[in-house]
Image 1 (cartoon, rainbow, N blue to C red):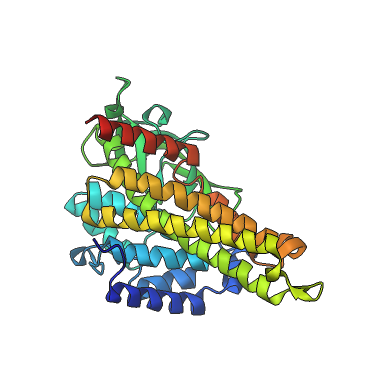
Image 2 (tube, rainbow, N blue to C red):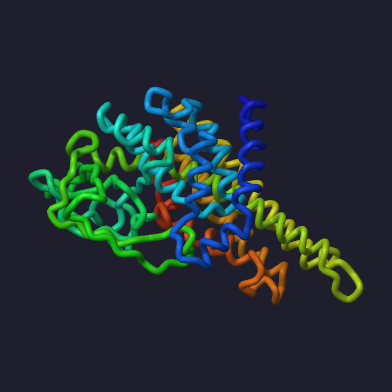
Length: 375
C-alpha cells in the first residue's frame, strides 16, 4: 500500500506553494491581522482562478473534479502560508455538506459559485460552549423557517450561505437533528462579528428570526450527515495543521541557525536541539496519521471514522506544540508583535477548537475503536 502522493499531486503541491509564496507572504497576512478587511479578497480571487477552491468539486458543478487527495495537498499549503481566507469553512465544511447531502438543484446553485470564488459558505453548528452533540442543538426549525442563535460560526460575518443544524424533533435521539440551507443575505438573519484569538479567520454570532430555510438531506438525518462532514473536515484540517507545524518548525530552525549568543549559534545548545527535535517528532507523527486519514477519505474506507479522529488529534497536538516551541526558540523576540511567531500560535489554538475540542476527538477515537472491536 502506497501512502505517498503521486507525481502529479506533488506537482500540484509545488504549484500551490509557489503561488502562495507570491500572493500570501507574512506581510499579506499581517495586512488582514492589523487592518479592517475580514479576509484577503485578492488571494481568494486568485485561489479561485488557480482552481484550488473547486479542486474536489466535480466538473459537472464547475469544479476541477480532481479529488480529496488533491484537496489534502492544497490544505497543507494553505496551512504553511497561514492563509487569511475562508477556505476551511467554505471548502471543508459547506462544500462537503453539499456534496454529501445536497440535491441537484442545491449543488448547481452553490457549488459552481464556491469553485469560482463568488460564494463563501459556512457551517452553523455550535450554540455557545460545548462540543458537537445532538443535545446541544437548540435552534428550531418548523414550517420552513429557523429560530435561534448560532455562535461561534466560522467566517459567518462574510458568508453568503450557511448549512445550519436545527432541532426538528423531541425524541431525545440523534434523529431530532436536521440540516438546512440558509441564504444569509435574505431576511430574518442578523449577523454580529465576534472577537476571537485569530482575526484572520473571523467568527460570528448569527441570529435566525423566522429565517427561510430549505432542507439539506432527509429529515432526521442531520446528525448522520454532520458526522460525515466533520470526519472529512477533520482530515482536511489535519493537513492544514501539518502545514502550519512544518512552517513553525522551519522558522524555529532557521532562527536557531542564524542567532548568535555567547559566540555560538543557539542551535548548537543542547536545550534548543532537544526542542527542535521534539517539534520534528510531533510534526512527523501528525503527518503519518494525516496520510492515513487521506487514504481513508479518498477511498471512502470503513476506517475513515477512526483515521479522521487520529489525524485530528495528532495534528492538533503537533501544531500547538510546534507553534509554542517556535516562540520559545526565538526567546524574548518570539513574544513580540514584530515577529511572525504569534500568527502561527494564534492559528494553532484557534484551529484546535474549530471542529470540537481535542478531548472531544479523543473520546470519539476511543468510542469508535471500541465499537469496531465489539463488532
